[in-house]
Length: 315
Picture 1 (cartoon, rainbow, N blue to C red):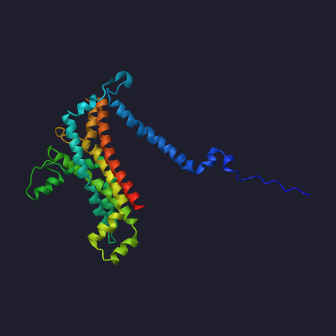
Picture 2 (cartoon, helix red, strand yellow):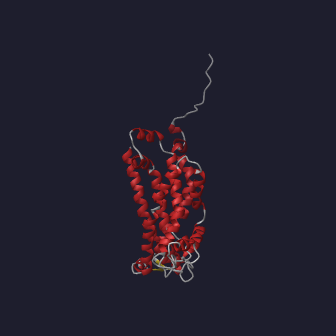
C-alpha cells in the first residue's frame, strides 16, 4: 500500500500566522502614510506646542530658552490685551477675513461664465487663470504701480471723470482696502479653478432632469448646481480664510505696515515683534502667533464639523 504524499498547508490558521500577517490589510496603509505623518508632526504639530511654550517666556531668541528665557506665565497675553497695535492688527485681520470671502462668489461667477462652449473660451480661461500662477510679490508690485497717485493707471482712469490726487496706499483710511483688493485678484482665480473642477465633475443627469422639470437660470443655479458644488465651496472657504488670516507678503511689499502702522495684521505684527530689526521679542511674537492659530482653529473646526454633519445627514 502506497502512502499519499504530504502536502504542506499553504494557508495556516490565523492563530499560527504572525501578528503582521494577521493585520496586514489594516497596517499597510499606515506604513505608506508614516513618512508624511512624521514630517507633518516634526514641522507642524511639534512647532505648534513649542510656540505655546515660548509664549510663556520673555526671551530674545538667543541662547537656550530654559537658560536665557524668563518664565512670565501669561504675562505676554496680558500685555496683548492693552496693546493698541495688536488691536489694530486684529481688526485689520477681521476686515481681511470678511472682504476676502468675496473671492468665493466672484470665483463661482467667473467659473460659470468660463464653463461655456463659446469661441475663444480657452483664451479667457488662460487670462483668468494667470493671476493664480504669479507670485504674491509680483502682485504686490503690480498693484503698487497701479495705485501710484499721479502716474498710476488708477489715477489716470479717475482723471477721466475729474478726480485728481487719490493716494490709496498713502491714506490710513484706504490703504488696507487697497491691499485687500490686490489680494482678491489671485484668490478669486484660485476659487475659480476649484469651481471649474467641481462643474466638470457634476452629474449631467441631474441637470437634464431639472431642465425637464422646468428649472431655469436662478432656480437651476440655487437648487441643482450649488448643492453639487458643496465640496468645492468647503475647500474654497477653508483656503480663503487661511489666506486672509495669514496675509503677510502683500502688506510687506505694498506698505510695510504703514502708513503709521494702519495696515498691520497679526502675522506682520508678529514678524515685527519677533524678528524685525528692533524686535527680538520671541515670547511676545509667539503669543501673537498663538492667538492667530486659535482664530484659524475656530473657523476650520467649524467648517469641518459642518461638513461632517452634512455627510452624516446624507447617509
